[in-house]
Image (cartoon, rainbow, N blue to C red; front, side, top):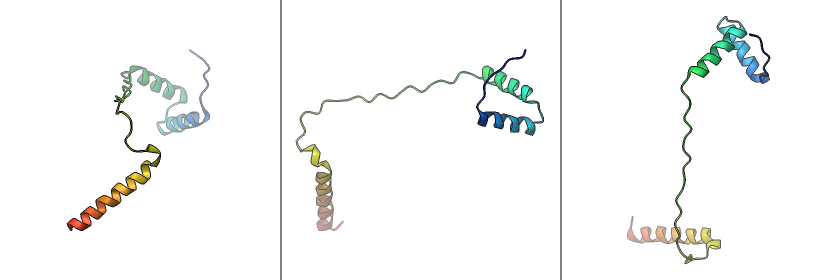
Length: 86
């Protein structure tokens, strides 16, 4: 049966190269690839991950200064380790 389909230029070039590499006509290669694709088991889509959220209450520190707070906490930990000799 004859039909007309539209194939992206890049894909068409890949098909032509592959047909030439396998010493097949483009029609025969496309038929083989379609048959193989239809015979393959269906691809199962991965379930999307859902993050559970939990209420944590009102923040005890101003979150607009979170980076500064993290820096101070890191500095305090470094000083604690230096004093402890670690």
